[in-house]
Image 1 (spheres, rainbow, N blue to C red):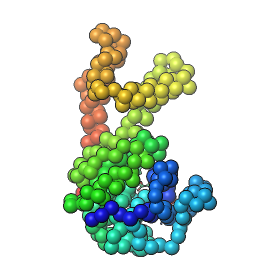
Image 2 (cartoon, rainbow, N blue to C red):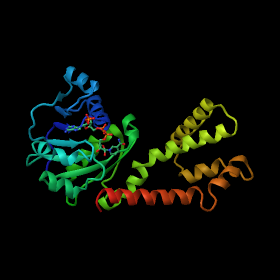
Image 3 (cartoon, helix red, strand yellow):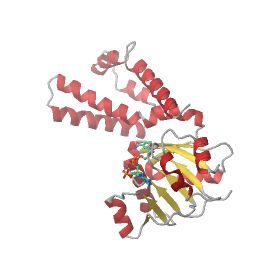
Image 4 (cartoon, rainbow, N blue to C red):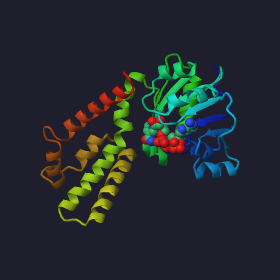
Length: 268
Ligand SMILES: NC(=O)c1ccc[n+]([C@@H]2O[C@H](COP(=O)([O-])OP(=O)(O)OC[C@H]3O[C@@H](n4cnc5c(N)ncnc54)[C@H](OP(=O)(O)O)[C@@H]3O)[C@@H](O)[C@H]2O)c1
């Protein structure tokens, strides 16, 4: 099957939908962008005023339909969504927990795909997982990988059986990193640092470590070892964080629990 014709129809212009659309506009996407949202934000309205998108035009079969509403809204708007699906429509859902088979069945097409973004996608630094059905056309995969780049890096296509574990890492992972900054700051405060200073130190350190990690060819374990001199200060702290039952095993347990909950919500 050939690449979809130019033209994007986005249903749900919230945080993620707007991040995607903003990226398409910025990169000069060559085709019309139609956005449907019952309560469009000022940002969406400003794009419409500038002639960059059309808002809430009459429903018509889309070339590519991107569904970015909350998962709980999806079953309620199926009739509306079906009006956007024609025989050649490629459907991409970014809704958490809605499986490929459920999408295909609900929308009456097998030309469906799923993506799982994360919140750093809102600043173009995200990790988005792409999931295609068996037998999907290579053209569709390449096209969707490109379409998701405004959110940051794209990984996949991954098998749908890997989505729960991958989601537990990159989907939930920003919260783990925020927690790290939060509890580092709290520990600093507990040891006498001023609250604002502790927060600034923790935030910048987490950000800086991330930037260094992405700039380096070394894996995180080597970067950690490089800053851990034998008998030194960092080593004293890591001996606590890495002892039996501490951070490594807690993270494993936390990820297992996230996977269990994701499967439960997906109805697996
Ligand atoms: N945010 C994340 O980190 C993240 C990560 C992975 C996946 N996702 C998925 O991305 C999707 C969107 O998340 P989000 O954070 O962008 O949510 P959001 O900001 O709430 O965006 C959803 C948008 O859909 C709109 N909407 C509601 N009913 C609609 C309808 N009938 N037709 C068209 N639009 C409608 C909402 O309008 P109202 O606000 O007026 O209801 C809202 O603007 C979700 O399915 C979520 O699972 C998000």
